Image (cartoon, rainbow, N blue to C red):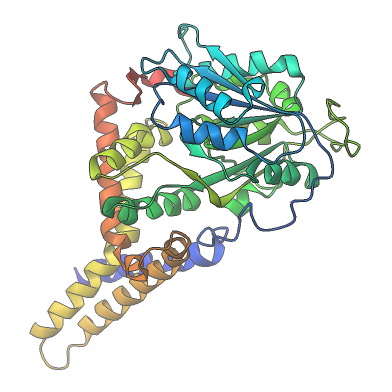
Length: 419
C-alpha cells in the first residue's frame, strides 16, 4: 500500500514539473492583446457580426461599445436578431440613434433555424451573408454580452496586419465580482490555457489551435478558404472549431495592403492564428452563483471530450491524480506523523512530497489569480476548485446520456449536432 501511495505522489509531482517546464508555459499571462504596438499600417474594411437572442438587458452596453470604437477605417455592425422575444432589436436601434450612428448599424431579422445548424452559427452565417455586400477584408465575430474597449478593434486589426494573421482572437476578461466568480472563473481561464497553451496556438509550426468566441477577427479570404461558417455549422464549441479549420487550411505567401487602401483583397495568406488575453475588453455575462457557472461548464465539457467514455474516465482519473493527490498526501503525512512509531520517517516523505506538489500547483495558478486581481490565497484553493470542475464534467456526461446536453437559450443540441 505504501508503495502505491508513494508512486501516486511521485507521479503527480512529476506531472506538475512537466506541466510547468514543458507544456507551452500555459500558466503565464504574457500573451495579451494590449501588449505591443497598435499603430495601423493600413485601414482594411471591417464588418462586425453580432448574433443576439434575448439580449435586451446587455445589448445597450455591448452595442454602444462596438459603435464607439476608435477604428478610423470603414466599420459596420450587423446585428442578427435571432428570433428574440424581449425587443432586442428595438433596444439596439435605440442605442445606434443615441450615439449618432444609425447608419453604421444593420439589423438582420433571423430566419428559422434549419436542420444541422446551431442557433448561434446560423445567426453568424446570416450576418456574414449580409455584410458581404461591403466586401470586408475582415469580419469581427463577437457576442452580444461583450463590452469592447474603445481601442479593441484597432488593436485586433493592427495585430492581424502587422503579423500577417488570418485569425486574431482574445479571451476577454470574464466577470469576476461575486464570491463564486472569484472562486471559479479564474480557474476556468487557467484550465482553458492548460488545454490550449496560448504559445502553442500562436506557433504556426504547432498544430494546437483554439480561439475565444467573444472576440474573433477573421480575414474574409481565410473564411472563404475553409469553406465558410457552414463547415463548422454543427459545432457547439464553435470558436475552437473555427480556429482549427483556419490553422489547418494552410496557404503560402503573405497578405499585403497599401497604407490607406480600402476594400483591397489579400494577395494570399497562411493558416496563421493568434490567441491571447485582454485586460480591457470584458464580458458582461454574470455568473454570480454556483449553478450558473456549473451550467456553463456542463453544457460543453463532455462535447470537449468528443462524447467518449474512455476520455471521460481518463479525465476524471487525471484530474484526481494531478489536483487532489498532493493535498491528500500532505494531510495524510501530517496525520500519520502523530501516530507514527519512533524511527518511522515515511510520513515525512508523504508530507513533503504533497507539500511540494501543492506549492507547484499554486505557483502555476498564481499568475491567473493576479491577472484577475483576486486574493493570492486563492492560488492554494485550486485542488477544491478542480474537484468541483471534475464533478461538472461528470455531470456534463450524465446530461448527455439523459438527452439534456448542449442546452442554451432555450435550445438543446444533441451529439449529432457536434463536430
